[in-house]
Every structure is written in C-alpha cells, then in structure tokens.
Image (cartoon, rainbow, N blue to C red; front, top):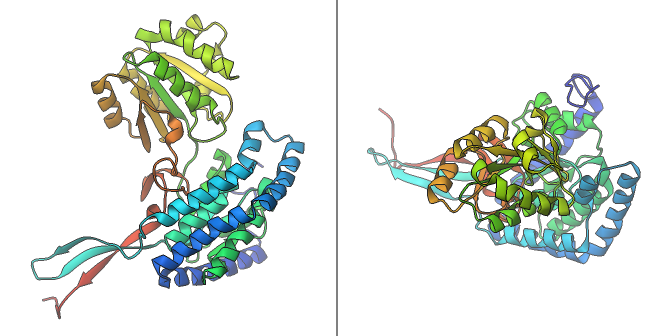
Length: 432
C-alpha cells in the first residue's frame, strides 16, 4: 500500500505497541513536570552540558554515523538524502553551537504578558507555560535530535523522538549523549526519549495517544507528513513541503540576483528552504536569464522552463504543471518568465506551499508590495531563501518550519513550543 494510506498498517497499531508507547509518554509527562519545576538556570545548565557532551563525543558520533551513511548508500539513497544524513565534526560543532545559542536565550516560562487591570480591580494576564509532551517524527537529519531536545528542554517540554531508520545508530548515540548531560544537571533522562523502533506502527501509536501526547511535529518528506496528519488524533504542526520561490524583479541588480539565485538553489539543494522555482520579470529576461542559467548550470543545476524561458535558454527542458508544484530537493530548478509583479504573486499563490519566498529588487514599492501581499511563513527581500532557518533568524535552532497558520507560523523556536494560560489576581473579588 501507499505509505500515506491510513490503512497501510491497519486502523490501529498493535496493542503491545500502543501500550509501550503509552508507557513512554507517561514517563515523559512525569519528566516534563520535573522540567517545569526546575529553574531556568538549571535548564540552561543542562543545555550547556549537552553542548559540551556533543563536542566531547564528536569522534564517536562521526564513526557511528558513518555506518548509517554506508548502509544508506548501499540501499541507493539519493545524494541529497545522504548529505542530510551525514554527520561531520563540523556539523557536530554546529549542533553544539546551536544548543549554546538556545541556552543563552531568555527563559520563556513563567513570563506574564499583557497584564491589565479590569474596572473592578482584577488584574488579568497571560502566563507562558509548556505544551507538555511533544512528539517529533523526522527523517535523515541527525541534527534534529539535538535541536528538538534542546528546544524542548528550554521550553519545559518533554519530547518523544522517532528518527528515520536510515539514522537509527546515530540517533541512538545522540540520545544517550544528551540524556547523560541531563542527568548530570540533575534533570530526568526521561525528558528526552526515543521510540524503541522505527516501525511506522510506533508512529501510529504516538500520534493517536490522546491525553498523553500534546503535539506532534513531523519533519521529512511529504508522504511521511501526510501519513502523520491523516492518522493523528492529537494536534499536528504541518509542513508538507518547501516549494520556495525567488522572484527577480525588473529593478533587480543582476549581479546580486545571480549570487542569490545560485546560493538559494545550489548551496544545499536537499533542504526545505532551497529555491525550487525561479520567477523572472519579462522586462529583464533577455539580459538576465542567459546569465543566471550559465551560473546555475555551472553548479550542475538542471533547468526546466516555460516557453519564454526556453526561447532564451535553449538548453533547458520544457516544464509541466507538475514542475511548478515540485519540491525537488535536488539540483533541479523550474524557471518561469512572468509579465509583472502581480503575475509573480499570483504564481506563488497558485503553486506555493507557504514556506519561503524572496524578491530581488531595488524598487522600494515593489519590495513593499511583495512583503505585504505574499503571506508565506517567511518572506525575504534581497537575500537567499536559505535564511529561512531558526538558527539564521535568531532562534538558535528550530523544531521545524510550520506552514499551518495556527499557533506558530514559520520557524519554531523555544517560544513557539509554549502556550499561554490566563492568570487572574484578585483581592477578595466575588462576582455579582
């Protein structure tokens, strides 16, 4: 059966799996209560300890990861996916740096916002609290293990992690490393738990654990996210795919635009904030398209273009409607010539996925209209779509990029993993 078929594994997971996941969720919930009682300083110390532990164990983590990469390569895994999976010493350093950046942020818990005094003297505010138990389902990228753990600890949430089978050794080693740092800081290891199997029955059990799991965030391919969403009985933050656009306006600086386009597509094509469609204003297409095509093809990018693109770039292949909706996650780019800013915005509305869009223009009015009228979760002017990332936007790390226009929209940091409760302060008030 298709992996997104809700009956692919039966209507319900096996009873034994349901019981096992329920037990893990209860342990996580108990650990989450301990996190909430802990001081911000103690949670910060745990995060700093986790960062140090990653650096201390970097060589071991890289060796373990190499086994996962070897096996994935033998199974014919794509180059883009292998890149996501690979853990190098530099990437471990980046993970540790992200944890320290999260640790340095203000503690979101207990903050009281919008405190007002009612006419009767009651003081009413909103206090930030954890969501509870957050389940994360993800594929390939081991850094998600550390990022998710860090953001949940910072925000006082416990987490249940289900990484992909292709990274099972790496994720197990990372979880053990992070749990050791938690215990050393006097916090429960159960605050960061991994599901014991990568079988999808465990995903089903987690996303159907009403009353035990408070939120599930899937990160991965569209099929995985649809599987989670179709089967979930708990809230889900959705991010189906990243069909990101760059619109090069008629008032663009062409040299700057070429640099931005090459970076957005080719710097790391296998990630969700890579450009998948390039839109070019017709008034500069004759000059700009051959130049940007040369720069992109020099980086190995295959171009699929509309008829106006093909007229100017004969080496491109014809694009179909499927290309405008595609998240390639590869060195493939759809290119369309549009007659106006309005047409570019209309194309994004029709084919975009609410992820990230960029305009390259020196025209203040065009930039202002694009920023106001394009309602994707991240809208960028004169910069690469690759900046749609929690770390780049000051969040330290991200839990994922929400394209659901509820609760959180765009990259999710620690603050986005909290909710607010009303707090009311009286002085013997009674209602009449």
